[in-house]
Image (cartoon, rainbow, N blue to C red; front, side, top):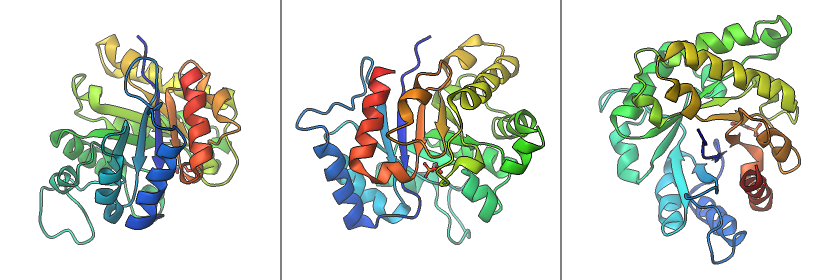
Length: 262
Ligand code: PGA
């Protein structure tokens, strides 16, 4: 089954509304008048995920282009006393279609667990959003030889009670924590090995082979203009979740072009 490549920019806590709208203008300018990041045929889908207060400005600026817009978190409740959180309905009202869930920075700094990732994922699906669910091991876990065990625990935890049908709206991002923002990228082989492991795991978790075959698994962690082509050429790597390089329009465009050739 051909999986459409997804190139996703995770802007993290960068770019307020004015700067975010400008960044979208700059990204669009990289493609000229005709949008070459398109949602049809072999072209990759392109997603940008700004911070909450930047979402509306970016949605407005992206209108009429092929750029998709997503958020970086979602709460599981529809509303209520959850200071600092945001609901699916609020995200929908901003016009977003995607949401990142369980990023390692959420796990590391904000107490996100496999159980809360699962709750957030259910909320995303209930609200008709496509979820990008992040998993990945720390350096200590890799050095201890527990990468697959950690990733398996995270994938099983995130996907508890999720149906094969729901999986049509789930993307998995494998992001080794030691590669995020460090400039230390996983080798093509290291990344492919874990991606193949995750796909094999999906095969055992869902009786319909359509899930393992159809679920997109992105790589994240210091993906950039120089290393994207090698990573995206791997058979089980279906795109990238890109932090730092997604804030540089020319680099982001180079990654998208590499994805078009993959
Ligand atoms: P990075 O971030 O590309 O800056 O390493 C990736 C991510 O955290 O999603």
